[in-house]
Image (cartoon, rainbow, N blue to C red; front, side, top):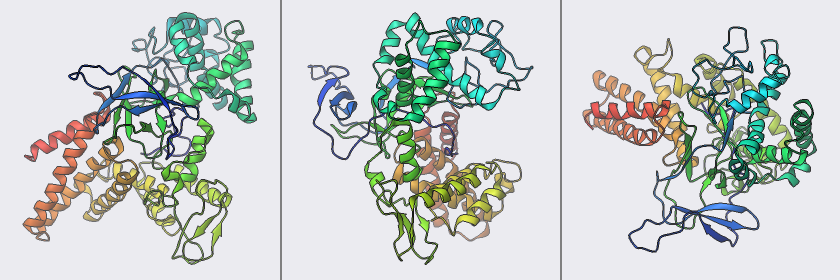
Length: 527
């Protein structure tokens, strides 16, 4: 389901796409060939004094073009993650039954983990460093370890791996150090700076005795580089954060023109255009979850990337027509409460029908409380999710992102869990699944259109209830043959589009398998 509060999201580079680009000088990634029969490179690096380096389309790009495929410069566990294997990033336990590295005692998934002694996993150099400090590190990672102890140790893993690159792979280390860290801006944020000073810099230099390897400023800059440029990735339960050689150069926009995924076998990033991109148009991705509301989305971006987004969507109180932040007016009950000045975080929210106003602080407290209610619901608990929709439909407008989050969960689990398998579902429940899928797809088409993973997934979910209801309607005589064929035609289109999108995902991913299933279903329909 879509990420909720405190869940991992893809983090990327701190550069914001504005409505008007500054004058810039360009530098080609690959020099265009002079021969007319040679292809023009897809993009080039542009530069401005305001935004630094960013990528620009070198020609018109069609939807689905592969722009970047590259393996990580560095990879490690996510910040605040649950315990994971240092080789493959799959979840592990901290109890006495969990397999551990025989040399450093760090928890691993098993003796045959594909990441043992590999540069993208638990390398020999890392193991040796941890073995020398075993009492400080792995011996602390037991079932009795506090949440803070676990979080602090796993946060250090990727930082230490980058430090080790300085000793064992100078070129990779130099490539990482060329990334933006925004150290000056970070110094001005006392809370952020002190966190890294205490949890990372002093700990590594004093407790880990690495003072001779990196100075204090160098460690702060590495932390900044990770906050500003890293991506969070993972397939089939694995979770990791990575730095890539060039993907970090994409600018930000809350309605991006690219989509990316990662290869579960190599952790490589695969970045494609999600829609047609015009020549000279900046290539963009979103640093935040696309279907989150503006107030929370902008706060998230500023907290990690240190800038306030001012894109077209953020500037629009109706968020490009999606209205996914609007509330029901508590006074007149007829109007909608929206931001009066979306680019000002502290500006009031006001009703469009009456004089009712709500401060940004009060609104955020309300949204946090509703979000907490949603967080407490088991994602497989259909009655509880339905009750959530019922309780808050008089508070939130139908397209509010918190209602959409609950609807997306229901889209996925209706037809898939015991007691709600498709053959067992009542026509009313099947109709409900169809309605939720259509509601969700309508917003995705506005905010994340084109060849995007979320759109492919929801189209695949939508095809089944339409098909079943069409068959039931034909059998009962409620549908004419013409109406039945119209619905079957819609099913075929949904399967075709979802197959096209999801088969762009890497082999081995659950999305790719779903794409194959969509293609197979389409074949069986004779389409």
